[in-house]
Length: 314
Image (tube, rainbow, N blue to C red; front, side, top):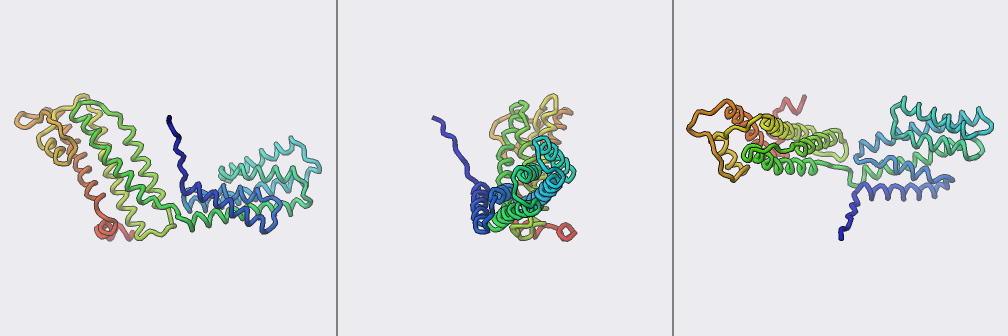
């Protein structure tokens, strides 16, 4: 019987904690709509502290937008009909799109609809109360994301790079040794994910990582080598015929542990043009593979020492 495994990550736990604390604070200040504190806490819990800060800013702008439009409608229309609410939602969405706060539009609409549906006396007072309730949730969520194990993907990038290096030999062997045409899409997806994670690591301010800029240079270098390996393999896969591997390339592949199979190699006979092209791309791929392994095994401190001064202080 197959059992579905439920993964509970840090963000899941932090989201639940943020909602709990936001509701407790809402009860302490005797808020009559604690729902907005919970919504604020949920909407600001992002993967990274930077993303949380951006979400907080956008949600605050969205809440102000919904409150403002709601107050204007309540002052203009003595009685709010469903068609009027629908028209107001249209306006709120248009304003949100214009301000490019797309993820804040749902909360803006909820605030607007609540203002129109619930008769709470002064529209201005109700708007300020909803803004304050939402702000409580946003601030709680941001603080939790900053203080409790903030996102640090340095190890994740290393693991993804190791996965790429370990997967690469099989693809190379399939094409060069077995003469097959492997699907390179999985390798391409790994490279894209590594690039995205490096972007995230580069933008983060929290947690503080020693020599972050220099480590980013190193990670970019590793990614470029991995990209070079992919490009050379893709070039070999684009050849109509594989050609015969040179003795030099064959020995390098065996030495690097990329193959343990015996194959015909060009040693004494004159290589054809296809053989020469194959050797060119294969040597480039092996150079990148060998250098990437050397870089990956070095600790960050050693790498930082080897980075030229003009790269780290530009």
